[in-house]
Structures are given as C-alpha cells and as structure tokens.
Picture 1: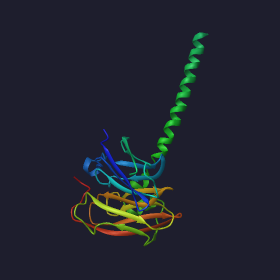
Picture 2: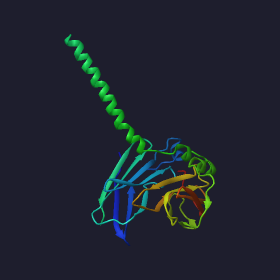
Picture 3: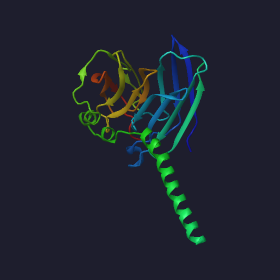
Picture 4: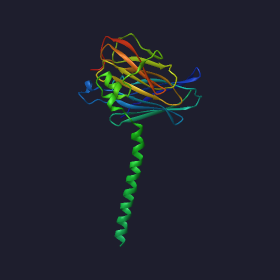
Length: 98
Length: 153
C-alpha cells in the first residue's frame, strides 16, 4: 500500500514554491539482497499540465522530500504530484496554491 | 446461422477491446520513461554516456548548495539551481555511489530549473550536476564528505 503524501505550495517572490513529501521505503539493492524497491518516476502538474518530469534511482533517501519552483502562479492553482515505483505502485496528491 | 453471427460478434468485440486496451496502456508507459542504461551504469562516465552527454562543459552557471560534511550519508540535502538560460534538464550524479546517477529532472514551460532533494551517499564523493541548456550540456561538481555511509543497512 502506498503511504500518505504531503504537499505545500506557496507564492514566494512572484513564483510558486512546491514542497512535497512521499512515504516510500526507497530500499536499495544492498538493503534488500537484490530486490530494490524505489520510486522511479515523478510528475508535477499545474492545472493538469505537466511541468516537471523526474526520474530517479534508489539513491534518493527514504521518504523522499523534494522542493521545486514554478514560474509565476496564482492563488488557487492546482498542483498535482504523482509517483510510480519499480513495482508498479503509484500514488498522487493535489493541493491548491496558498 | 444464429450461432455463427453471435460468434462473429464476440470475435469483433474481443478485437475492439484489445485495441482499446492497447491504446490505453501505451500513453501510460510512454509517461513512465526511465533511462535504464543511465541509471544501471556503475560508473559516472557510463552514466553520463547513458544520458547522452559524455563531454559536458564545466560551468559556473550551475549552483550546488550542499553541506561540506554530511554527518548522515542516508540523508544528504542537495539544492541545485541553474542560472543558464533555457535550462531544460538537471541530473545529479554521486560519483562514488554503486549506481552514480541519483536523479534527473526535465523542466517544461512553467517550471524553473531548481530542485532540492535528499540523497544517499555511500562514502565521501564528488557530486556532479549536469544541466542541459539550449541543447548543450554543462556540468559542475562539489565534494561532499560523508562520515557515516547511507546505502547499506
């Protein structure tokens, strides 16, 4: 089961700062005797339009936290972040810019 | 007669369903692109080749903010800003990790070339950041010393 996600999006200096937390073991091959379990893809969308696509490895820390910065933005813009891991599990969260 | 046409209908329905499922799955797979060659590389040089940029030019336009000494290799905060005009992607490589490529981000219209993440480091290593701007590749490095490694148990 995919654990909870948390996200905050705030206007700062004319841009939008997005900080997102994902609950995930991000287990390395070393920790699991060759059965790593980690998030491979994340997507950030603004009002349904993709703006950032990320790919990652098992070297990202457990329960990943990312900060991103979006150009401009307005109160109420819908920010969505989703992830997909190497076992096909997925989760997403949505928030409005405050 | 009746049976024949029902068979035909079933077959036609099956074919339509197969086409629909195929069509639905493809976009999902396309979105989930993961550069296996680059991520499975065991040396920074191979990972850079996998990313298609073995000869990036050193640049001061890439700013790496990270502690000089990371006490806990399991959580090393790294903040990257590219000031290069038209930056479309940023990749982070931890040169001495078993798999050096840690992450790569593509920035589209609406996003600024900035990311902060937490990475695991097995030992003291150069962290190399690769940025693509205007179709050209640039890189910068910063050494981070690690007192306790963070890739194993």
